[in-house]
Length: 315
Image 1 (cartoon, helix red, strand yellow):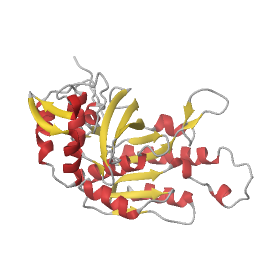
Image 2: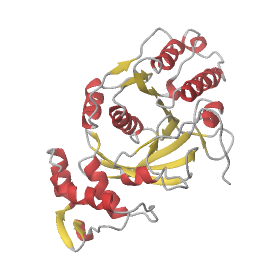
Image 3: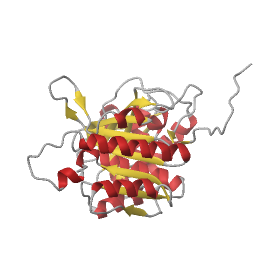
Image 4: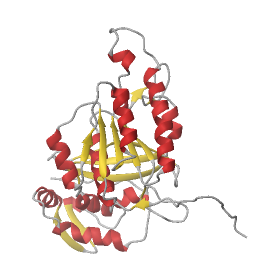
């Protein structure tokens, strides 16, 4: 007989974004795909790889799916027009609350409190920019080692409790990658507590760039409490716009072997769909029709993991 579970048990709900390799990267043993809602997620990568742009777009997709709002603890500074463009492109129609206060501690507390109000998605941008009161109010050169890690440990425990109490909320913590001092490999700021309390840890980098400054993000799910780990995904970012579902579908078809692009001529099922640069022109013009065959192709196919890397070229 199967085991019995007693108590209040809630299934993990998942949001299928339509970004095929991204959704497949979170597949569990039962074959469920899609991003798990209710997770505390750390998303890190090198400087300038597109972490914030990708996270804002993903948050917009999730918040719109939940018909909720977004709380942003911005500690780095951002272009509000660009943020608006990213969220509008993701189809987000709610409100994004920019959390502000005199200290980073109070801003982060507001983030926690916002999850109790009308926000289901929270973003910290970024952990590396957190400046505790002892540091921001002190003299340059004073030793403040460990204060940010202690602050993040306290915040992680608070957020973890809120996510346990309400599985409909999601937190994204954007972070940077640094060389490990005195050793090999890399490390992310903020201490170890946020590492073991995070349900999902994603490391991203730019896989490929195109002449119009669009680019493909390669992500690796190095920790996944809701499925397998070490799965890769690819998401295409349209320059100046953010996540592009159509371009991502095209690239996913190439990666999954459902299409090919010899000499930049995209072919699928022995049918030529035109030069690759035409697709980028269509994306910038807001024309999604050329991408429909690739979106439909992915929808018809059963889940399959990316087993090889493909370089996509553009003239």
